[in-house]
Length: 172
Ligand SMILES: NC(=O)c1ccc[n+]([C@@H]2O[C@H](COP(=O)([O-])OP(=O)(O)OC[C@H]3O[C@@H](n4cnc5c(N)ncnc54)[C@H](OP(=O)(O)O)[C@@H]3O)[C@@H](O)[C@H]2O)c1
Image: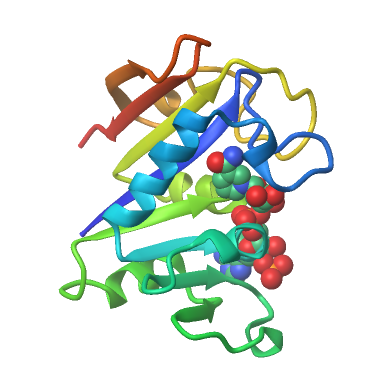
């Protein structure tokens, strides 16, 4: 089974801007289309509870959402949503044979833990040509994924404003 991360960051490495938790105010239309296509390509998503709170209304209803939380018993019940505090390795093992791919939606906390454990196989990272200056930061430099053992497999210009989509694959 493969795990695929998807995210949009500013050139200075932020997933959010200032105190606004929703990235849609600064991501391009082209990235929004790419994100929408990614969501529809996969049936199972993994994310942290903070990302879920922001993204939940925009996620396809029929996809299975696995949401990391230390407060599983306090979370509201929702169809197709599993709150869990199991280890990432156990979660991914429990899907072996049931699905071939899981899309990881973030945020920074979940990405960092999975990357440290080498549990991300691929990443689609959009870099928007904006400087957010503050917010939730994924990385302080542009070679974060290379440092984590990934190879840049493809780089694509999404528009003429400078939005770049980078596709990384973990070197095995
Ligand atoms: N630009 C983008 O593409 C993009 C992508 C993803 C997210 N974001 C944004 O990033 C922000 C969230 O990022 P974040 O790093 O602050 O938070 P996050 O990773 O989305 O969620 C963190 C929360 O997940 C739970 N969690 C994480 N690891 C856990 C573990 N090992 N076991 C149990 N629970 C665990 C905890 O929830 P509890 O507090 O419930 O215990 C923790 O507080 C949001 O504003 C979101 O919109 C942007």
